[in-house]
Image: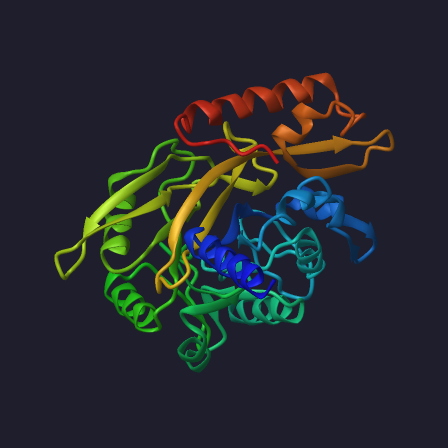
Length: 370
């Protein structure tokens, strides 16, 4: 009996040793421009001075909840007091922050051309409000001391260690008021920041860039050059925002200073997540979903499977004239006709046509249907 037990024990140990250990996987979802135009502010007002943005994210919340980390680009400021305004100076109520948290966002990047729309007070208050809601945040800072202590943003999740960096091409000519800081695209500073990120030995370095030209459906030479510089100096993934339309997703490669060849996924622009923009192609954006994979006993993770989820901006008008802005995952609506029973056929048709243009533009990249 003892010999049989020992035999089966050894057999089980042999089988266990022969089966490769399953790698650890971390799922990330990135969202495009979170905007706050005047009609959006008005639609979120429930009473004088009271706002609720929670309904806007009702249909996308189940998608974001499937991520281990959900990251959004907050292209507005939270000044904490009226006047609340849309374009060209984005000043939204603080109530947007808890709605984004409820929707499932974990990290918000805040370096963009509208970072200074509420001046220095707005930069600081935006950071404070996000921190109070439990967000991790980077790209803007209340002072140099905080940037030195908190940048690059190091995120620890389920055994993974990630470094996030975030930069913008400018701030629409509105100067940054001391002591606040908005990370600008400065290649000397970026190289130094990436060196610091590498020194911390993360599993993955992710750079979120606010770059490119508005409304252009393809990336430009400057974006490509910047992407290659980022990759050469350590970026494992580059995520783009600002053009307000979806641009290509590509694998780019570059030669590092030590002569090694490096490759990384570059999402040139995710388009809008939610906004009131009416220009062509601005009513739809994407969520970019990617898996970070780490094998047992390997110090460095790798980028695994990735794909996109089309998200359409739908403005629902109730019988009483009240409008509600929704971020709609297109495939969820396509697969479930009863998801939005009050959605007009004309709106559904526009949504499908908008999604098809994005699907053609991203041909070759997997579409994920949540």
